[in-house]
Length: 461
Image (cartoon, rainbow, N blue to C red; front, side):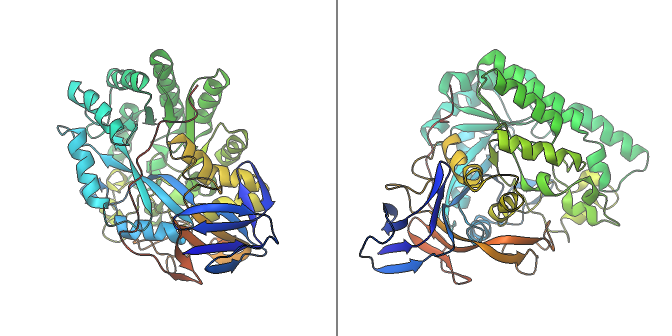
């Protein structure tokens, strides 16, 4: 089947222009000057709308085990919800348990996702056990299309890696060209603060934020950057939330170091005040790093404008309020860490355009193009151009919507953005040429999504 999208404004990271987009099979065949006659099996009128590349969310956690439970979205429900929100590719995390191999972990995550995804998907690898075998297996993962490896300076006893272990993994990354992704919080110090709060009888959700101060994110980020400088490894800071951490990233980038960072919508729009909501409501907003005081938000928006923050991902890791978040009633340290968001990233970032924080082109860059380039999927994905996968979103910038758990498609019983009024909404979504969202209905199917074998980071110098 061929499809012609007519009369829309095509927006890429490099600019915007009026063009018709011809889709043939799974790929974009041509960009056509408006008015030029082209034959197609079907025609869509996109007058007054944007035509943008499908969103790429490079930080999700579907079916992730955590604290005796697992995240509420399966690969089927999570990728379906992503499609509703204009995201056509996710990169999820395969989680290595201590004592297991990276390759067996990758096989396990393939068995979870293969045949169950509505959109295309890839994997990062969480390395929680650094030894000679796992370092060698990093090479095999790269050959299998998984070339980014996440490590943790937080969660002692679970995912935590020592500086020496991080250094060894970074040396392997320097050798292979892989990218080390870092959860940068000082977990040793945080655990002491948590224990002290609980010993003082302070168990409410807001303590999650107060015991993980932004200074300890800034310190860990600086330490990770120095380890990367010593080893020559590329470094990608995940879910950056604090101005102190951004300052460290900015200083490193100013020296030309291969340091990159992402933030998430929750850090742009929510704050410590949400963690302090009455009763146990704040548990809905428990994630790590925690939500920060509102004054950090302006720094993050500035970082997006200056490209010191290169990507916005969701860290989508939803746990239902009932039965899951409530495991931590009276003890905030037992609240499962994570928030839902994969369905609303593109819309929430469009609000940055509406409010004048970023341009339309920068919007597309941070939700699609840079993720594609950073994680080795460009120009197959992340751009409206001939030869690219036909991951195409028709976006109505004038439509309005109100976010609510009653209408979202994620398998979680609350919305972190309940009642948010937004301007802009996804109209139609194509995944590799297949129409999956149109006319307010889902037309996709489980198993349509394919595994994306990724190349190396295209920003390395």
